Image (cartoon, rainbow, N blue to C red; front, side, top):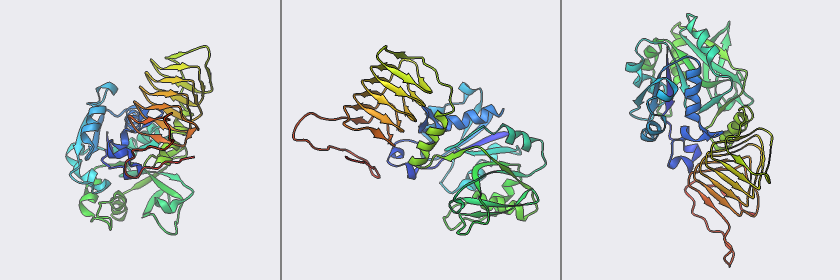
Length: 354
């Protein structure tokens, strides 16, 4: 069995962060989301992994490599155009061959892994299996109707949902899926929809089985979702300290301090993670905060935020919270008068000022 990870999206909902970086490489609890997906696939015993890439292919290949660090083989599949998930399957046909495979969206975070899903599908005669979860607002998702233990219909973002079972973005297929992706036509969005391909399987007598996931699941496509995923993951990781905490600091709760990090005269309240070679000085880091590697936080307070690598945050007059701060950002307070806000911000930036 093979794994196909789709990582070709542009990440428009995470701009301006994704103007310069692939959305799948934004870290949750100091680990890129795509790495978490790869580890989930590896934990399920799959070692042949294809990653569908688009415009951000060079960065993804540089960060992920050939898969040897996880003991897997990675094949990169360049999608010729961003024409949908079914198109990604179509362009992966030569690599997938006649193998059964799991397709996993590279920006999803799911609780509990996919081991049971893989085992069920491997020992069944189903042609496809679709992961579903119950959601509060199904009108924002593709939803499934189930009869007699099988999916009989999929509806994309219905105004009046007939079901609260939403598609998570994890699918399992046998080679019959290629018949479907060759047969369907583009949707009104101009894309080849995977829901249309699955519906084609259903209408042509193939067995499409539901797998209802009862744990949490988050699509990290928006800032609010990325912060929510950070909360979930931080609350579950096993904390440790591989850095230095001085005697004037207080660390409480689930706090991970990575190699080379220093905590000086500061308060850290978990769940939180402080990355490698990061210095926290005369500061407060509150719950559900991830600070990546080689950062400096001095005379400041941060809570419920994600700070990416190589950032400097100094002398803030108020607490920074509910924020996603990109790479190599400098935030500070100047003592020079007259007082004024000075900002250099990219498109689609959001700033709250007291």
